[in-house]
Image (cartoon, rainbow, N blue to C red; front, side, top):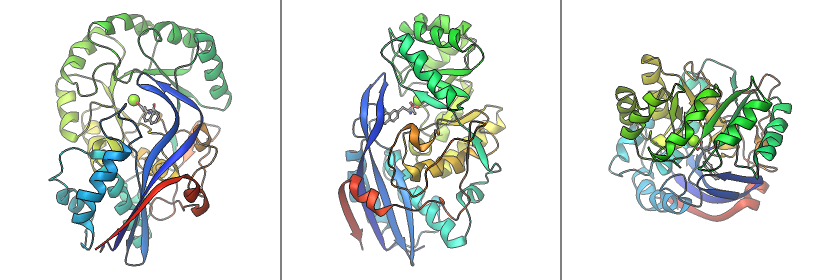
Length: 369
Ligand code: NPQ
Ligand code: MG
């Protein structure tokens, strides 16, 4: 595919309700939409880096710079043969996985549209609907959290993830478990604890949680490997896993027993599939994490999550969990069995609502050879 033109759109979308994590309280989300023109076909990708470096060092700002100044120049005018070719061309760039993944997603969309095949088919997906859950932000009190969780359960979500941070953890999880004794429940600390303060999480081990996500530093494997033996509950790594190499090392040192896969965090869908395959070979279940994606990234997550070893419900919630308005014509809705159906049209299987895109675009840049 000869890449003729790349357009970057920096988007800012209003969240339907504030989303609080251990690294901050968001009321909007930024991201970059990539639009790539090749031989009469247009492909779309989403770079999930947010406005602030709370989850990762990447931001919409760093990704805009890396995409404009380093990635576009080695892609424009080139005849790319696919993701592996792309990854080799950008290997000179250290890090910046979310920037790389945004463009790589658009290449997959192009390839699917050129072949008339869905992304699920291209990636080797086997399910036409995937189990999903919901990620619930930190609330004003344990009672308010129970109320919010009850609301999602009444919408038919069957897996609940609650955000925690020091001082807002054990009491909250105990209150939810007491209110909903048999609901699939997990927690996500987004790196808010140290090996020492993580000792305060020991009571979580008695709540029959599915997992405890990323308790320690966002770039740590070793300390997680010292923490895991102290818990019966599986640790799950998110931020720490930025490559296939990290995955292998984490499994070899016993840093976790479950992996949260996000194509943006690991540099693209091809890396995400490779991590899925390694975990499958090692008997480690994975699930698809979420980055509050628009319908573009949400469609990619659904295709990825349809692969066989995505054994746990993902954070791919319905569109209306986050957004009253989205940039895709398609809105994703929750089926009554807590699944979301996987698009089966060519490529990502979504179309852009140009009016909605215009309303949320803060900045736009078109690049060509
Ligand atoms: C996680 N996602 O699994 C991330 C945290 C996250 C669904 O919990 C803007 C505002 C962007 C909040 C990206 C979920 C964000 C955000 C990621 C939270 O750790
Ligand atoms: Mg997480």
